[in-house]
Every structure is written in structure tokens, then in C-alpha cells.
Image 1 (cartoon, rainbow, N blue to C red):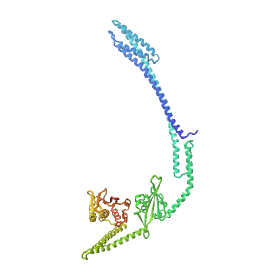
Image 2 (image 1 turned 90 degrees about the vertical axis):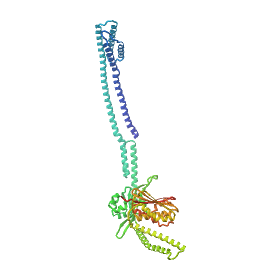
Image 3 (image 1 turned 30 degrees about the horizontal axis):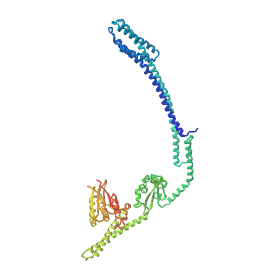
Image 4 (image 1 turned 60 degrees about the vertical axis):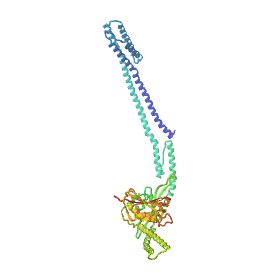
Amino acid sequence: MKLNLKTKLYAGLGFLVLLIILLWTSGLIFISTLADTSGAIIENNNRTVTYMQNMEQALTEIHLGMSRERLGKVDSLEQEILQNLRNQQQNITEEGEAELSNKLQKRIVKYFDAIDDQKNQSVSNDAFFQSLDEEYGQLQYLLAQITYMNLEAIHQKNDRAQKTAGNIIFYMSIIGIASLLLAVGLLINYPGYIVNPIQELIARIKSIANQNYDQRLEFETGDEYEELAKAFNTMAARLQEFESSNLAKIKSEKQRIEAVINQMNEAVIGLDNEDNILFVNAKAEELIGIDRELLVGKYVPDLAVKNDLIRKMLSDSNNEDKNKDQANSPDLIKLPTDDRFVYYSKEVQPVLLNEQSSNPKKKIGSIITLKNVTHFQEINEAKTNFIAVVSHELKTPIASINMSLRLLEDERVGPLNDEQSELIRNIRQDAERMKTTTAELLNLSKIETGNIQLNTQPAKPVDLLQYAYETMVMQANQKNIEISTESDQELSPVKVDLQKTVWVLVNLLSNAIRYTPQDGKIIMRGENKISSVQFSVVDMGEGIAEEHLDKIFQKYFQVYGDSDGSGLGLSIAKEFINAQGGEIGVESEVGKGSTFYFTLPKVKE
């Protein structure tokens, strides 16, 4: 008959319960037997010994309390002795004890009759006391015999109790050892019977997970384990069939994908989530100069230590925030060739796996692509050089225009009518705008060519705020705008390029004045931070929409299409601040104004 797993579990646990009941029942029986034996010693013989002691003490008091001249009072002691005698006659437990008790009764009656006879005589004699002493001795002898008989019985019953206790210990030991052996055997074998098939099943499942589909289970237990083994074997066989039928197709698709990747003109490198290289195409292999067999499976940081190009290609591949900004400010990799430099832009694309629709996508790796942007870089450099040349060449005609305007405004040349004065004023504004734009283009060309030169020196933040205020106060007064300055007490000195930092503050103030309405207010602040000082310009203008905040510092970007600016000021300001080791940012809300801020490092003490 085959038993299922549930029945076997019940059988094993039931057997343990049976052992517990057996130990409990046998213990109760043996303890009850021992209690009965001990009770016999205490309840019967001990009372007899007590009665004998009470009678002996009373007789002693009677006998010693009498004198030859006068008999003592014995009535109360006589009643006590007779009461103990009656109790003794009702507590006969040993063989021969009844006969001795009857003799004791007769002697006691005779002893008290002699005392009563003597009480009726006026004069006592020595013969009476002598006979009374003899009776007293007989009574002592009988009391001693009965006491000894019961004490002997107590010893005998105690020996029997000890023997009973020894037997109980022996039998309990046998039962306990047998139960222990059975329980240990069950403990050793039964968990293994339950757990071993599960452990084997886990091992086989892990092998299946590693695509070893030839795994099989053989359980001939006649229970659910045997059914589980059959189901597992069926599953493994079907997986093996599926693997065999699809392996060729998968290999073909893999080879096709690898061929496509290898034919790409862009260098492509695939990484897993632990920064191990999964694949490298032919172009990437050519750029790196290492066989792909030596690259695949290697840990990126280990390779980057030995190869500068790999370090440039794979640096910050897990920095998602930086990757988001690469489209706007790509990191170019510059490689020398025989006659020129070749430029590559790096793009890192995370590979996401959507396990469940309700959960966010999980990153399982990334793909790094290097695009050849040499042509665009050459065009950009040509553009930068052109801007630099044009901006430099425009400085002379702009200076000539300004000089001509000053001559025209000189009264010695001749008076001007209102129309001529308005025309000169418009020409001057256009010339100033051209001058500002030219200066910004020159700064931009220096930035793009990496020729920013800093003349850093310690400066007081309050002085920087004051310089900017004095530069822009007249322009603010034209719109009746109030500029106030707020700063922490004892602002720490900062290490800055004074000219470029004041230029940034003036640029921020100029924008604030432009977008702050008539009779408005602008606040300049200086605040101590942990390792830097933060400068802020707060205006009460229209504010900037949230979708524009991440683009505000890009080149040529303008929030308002009709702006008079070139769209370069904030981009140049960002480059100036970053070059000095600071950060620049903006906070704004439409209808409530904007706060532009930047930080500069404190002078190290």
C-alpha cells in the first residue's frame, strides 16, 4: 500500500506524540506507586510511634511526680494515656502489634488500679511503691517493644520504597533510552526523507536555469515526490526539445546582429550592469587597438587603468545625469592621425528591461557609441575662428562710428534739429548693441578655443556687489527701479577673476533690469555657504516657464523671441563661473520673477 506524503508526516509526528504519552503515563504510574509506598510509612507507623511517645511521657510525669509521702494528681494524665491507647488500638498495622497493645492495656489498667487503691489508704508504704516501680518498668518495656516494632517496620518499608524508587529509575531509564533512540532515529532519518528530495530538486532547477536541460529526477517513494519527479522530468524534456529546436535560430539571429554591429561605421561597445564588456564591434576594436577576444568579458575599470582611450571612452558610462546633457555639451574624444586630429562624440544609451508593466524599467546594461564628428568639429572651429576674426575686425568700425557720433553731437560742428538728434540716438544705441555683441562673440570664441585666461585673486564679496551696483544703477534709474543689496555679516573672501566675475554680475543685473517692470525692485544678495559664497540677483519680472529652465544657459537660446539680446550672455556667464570652480543656476516661477545665482569658492585659510 502506497502512502502519500501527508500520511507519512502524520505517521512520523504521531509516533513522536505516542512516545511523549508513553513517557507521561509511565511516569505518572511510577510516581503514584512511590507516593503510595512513602505514604504508608508516614501515615501508619509514624502515628504509632507518636502514640507511644505520648504515653511514655505521660507515665514518666505520673511516676516521677509521686512521692512516698503523697501521691500526685494523675487524673488528667491518665485520660491522656488512655486516649493515646485507644488511638493505638485503632492503628494496628504490624503483625503481633495487637497482642502487645492488649498487654499494654492490661498493664496500664493494673497500674492505675494500684494508684487508685493507694489513694483510698491514708498511709502509703514502701511495698506499694516497689510494686508500682515494677509495673512502671513493665509498661516501659511494652512501650519500647511497640515503638521498636513500628520503627523496624518503617525501616523495612523505607527499604521497599528505595527498592521501588530504584525499579522506577530502572524502568524509566529503559523507557527513556528506548524513546530517545527511537526519537533520534526518527530525527536523523525523517528530516532527510523530507528535505533531501527538495534539495535535489533545487539543485536540478538551478542546473535547468543554467540551460542544462538533461537533468532528471528519480524518486521511487510512492508519494507526491514521485509525482513531482515525473512532472519535473516532463518539463525538462520539453525544455530540451524547445532548446534544441530554437538554438539554431537563436544562433543565426545572434550572428546576424553581430554582423550588423560590425558593419557599422560607428564604434559600439556593450556593457552589462556590472560594467563587464559584452561585445565590441570591428570599428571599436580598431580604435582601441586590442583584439576583441581580449576585451569581451573583461571588467571596464581594470582595462581603463592600462588604456587611456578606453578610459576616455568608458568614463562616466553609468552617470545618467551627465548622459542626459551630452546632446547639448558632448564630450569629444580627440585622436591623432598622420596628418590631422580625428574627433569622436560619445553617447551612452542605457539598456532597460521592463519586467512588469506596473514596475519601473530595470537597467541591465548600457551601449556606448562613438560617432566620428571630425567634419562638424572642423566646421565649428572654422566658425569660431571666423567669429573671432569678424568680431575683432568690427571693433575698429564701431569705434569710428562712436567717434563720428561724438563729433556730430559737438555743437561746434553745428546745431542739430530734433529729427537729427533722434537719428543719432538710434545710431548710438545700435552701435552700443553691436559693441556688446562683438564683445560677447569674442568671449565666446575664447571659450570655444579653450583660451580663457583667469587672473584670480582674493576679493571681498561686498566689493563685487558694489562694483556691479555702480555700473548698473544709472540704467536702473531710467526705469525707476530700486536696486538693494543684502548680505550676511562678515562674508568670507573669495578667490576670483575680478573682471569676469563683475561681468557676470552686471550681465545678470542687466537682464533683471530688462525684464523688471517700471518702478520695480531688484535685490542682490551675498550668502555664506560651507565652502563657498553664493551671489544672487532677484528680480520681479515675468518669470521663466519650467520647460525653459534647463535650456536657459545654452548658447543662442532666448526665452522671448523679441529680446534685444544675442542669447550668449548667460552661456558665457556659465563658462566664466565654471572656469573659476563655481556653479551657476536659476530658480523661477511664472508671474513671480526669477532668481539667478552662482557660487564661488572661499579663499582657503
